[in-house]
Length: 293
Image 1 (spheres, one colour):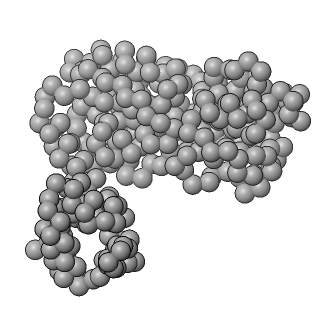
Image 2 (cartoon, helix red, strand yellow):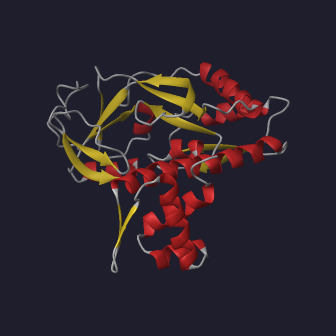
Image 3 (cartoon, one colour):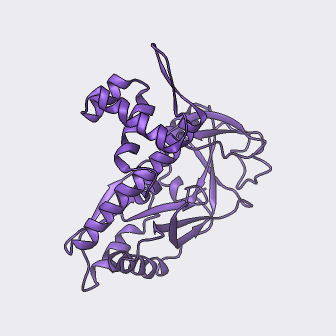
């Protein structure tokens, strides 16, 4: 017999997020005593204390913190499994591709054209995600495939096909000390201030200073204009060029890869056909390794 039931896990996660029995019960549309009894049964079955309760507050124990973290992932997995099962049984289902605006290295039109030539092609719905959450769309079933950038995006739980390999570009304000160079190196950029991407742990070079938090390339470019930071981006994400900023290839930076990603357990013909078409289309395009200058 399973130690946890999905409904009990839903109850616990709601309470752990609200830390208030009344609000959690209202969110779940159940009576507060029913929620209290469900949590008590859960603690009894696990032989663990998940919550510290007083007359004024509810707090999570270390065991409760762990169950909240893993419970969220478990509920997302259950939801994704149900969605994938429904879509697998729907012979008319559209294929959903998540990208970030401007994050296709100008390959998307060719990919869609190559896929449309296949006899069993479906309609492709384009979903626009943020700078850091597109992989989550695939993991939780909101999208079937995603265009991601390696090594920047988290590929946990995903398989991928590399579509393009490209160099990286430093974007500098016009009065920057390196603006007169034709190209720069990583050593040149040591100790520079780099943006912090919202939702992502700091991944800048050890010598770099963490700069302003940004959620997308447009915000990063605005901070560069103000002289608050510089940025190092894949070549395709550095285009189109913005007037007033300086773009210089980083000659020794590791290349980045634009990849098409899908869930590791997704073996649907729908997805395999799109991946094959994307690989074919990308093979006909030769992206330069250096960036705009």
